[in-house]
Length: 194
Image (cartoon, rainbow, N blue to C red; front, side, top):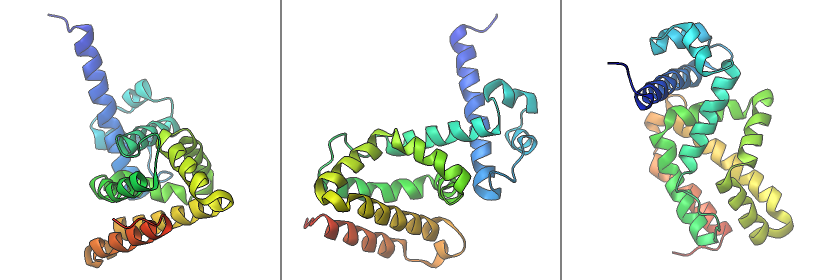
C-alpha cells in the first residue's frame, strides 16, 4: 500500500531534522567552515544528494539551523511586553535553556565572533520577537544608554556562554555561582529586589 501524503510529509520532516541535528553537532564541534556536506551526510547516515533535496547549500542548512534554534530557544521565554520583572524571570530561565541546548549555543556563540557570520546572526535576531521586546524594554528603562546597556548584556551573555560551554572549565566552574552572579548584575540594573 502506498504511503499517504501525511506519511510522506512526516518522513520528510524527520529526515530534515536528522540532517539538521547531524550538521549542528558537527558545526558545534568542528566549526562551520571545516565541516563539509560529505561529513554531514556520513554523520546523518544519508546520501549527500539527499541533503540538497532539503537545503540549497551548506549556508542554507546553517541558516535553517539558526532560525530553528533561535525560535526554539525563545519559545515561551520572553513575553511580548516585557517589564523589568518579567525580563529578570525570563533571563533566569534562559540560563537553563543554554545548558539544555548546549550544542546549539556552542554553535551560536562560536559563530557570533566570526564577522562574516555575525552580521547574519544580527539580522536573524533583529526579526526575533523576544529580542525586539528586550530592545523596547531597554529603551524604555535606560533611555539614551539603551544601546550601551544592550552591548554590555551581550558581552556578559557571550562570556557566560563561553565559560559554560567550552573546554574543561565547564567541568570545574561552579555554574550555579556564575549564574547567580550574572543574575545579581541583571537584578541590580533593573532595581529588582525579589
